[in-house]
Image (cartoon, rainbow, N blue to C red; front, side, top):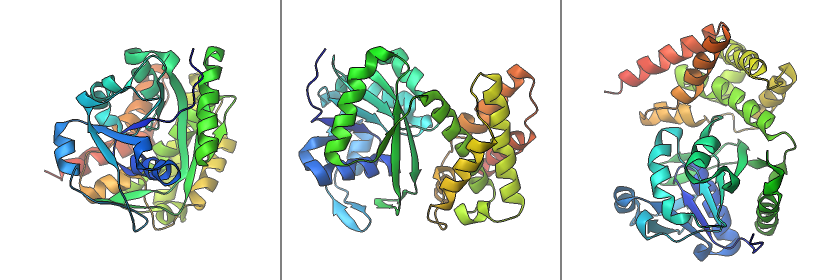
Length: 307
């Protein structure tokens, strides 16, 4: 097993998180250290476009997926709705020693990627605490947050250490979790609440934190995730809920999460990943989840209005 230093990074996805981590790597290691991998249509869309991070222009190398070479580290940063396409695009990026991090929302992307390319390559990753918003070609953020990393197989310890060494080198904030699945579900709980509520009520972080119907809906949806998680053997609690509400309070109050941005940009959301997953798992355990059923219905109604 190679212990070489990570020096070549590929990123799939030029959304808020892709640009956030791509720009950070470029600033610390230079433009040659990272490639954004994409299929032909996206390459044509982006190849002559300028990108800005907090008003500063950042230049990136864009590579057609079929021309890509194996990377030391591959970061999957697409929306869940784009994961199937990303699985095809990342094929050329993956070599024998490639490590894969998924910063997708939800609780299933690691297993989906691992099914295609081997779970031994995948380090569980949870991105949280950032308030990055991308509008067109401009990324804005006040909080970078951190990446939470963890393994469920001790045989991956060497890969985890390679990632830690790389993050130390580029000064990327991270936390190593002893129970990464608990962290994964905790972030899922937050997203189910804040993402869907911001979209349905067309509001921002300040709006869901203020006393009122949006706040009550958000909390109810998160509590339903706690019930489902407990039924699945994940010990979420009110303490976890309170911890994540505290995280929201640190974000730009005028900011909005990805589904709030989806409504602004009239794009399809990840509601199937959030309420859709909760409803499906709740049915299996015979758990009543009215808040998520309400959010699911309203998001679908909003998306139908785009047409």
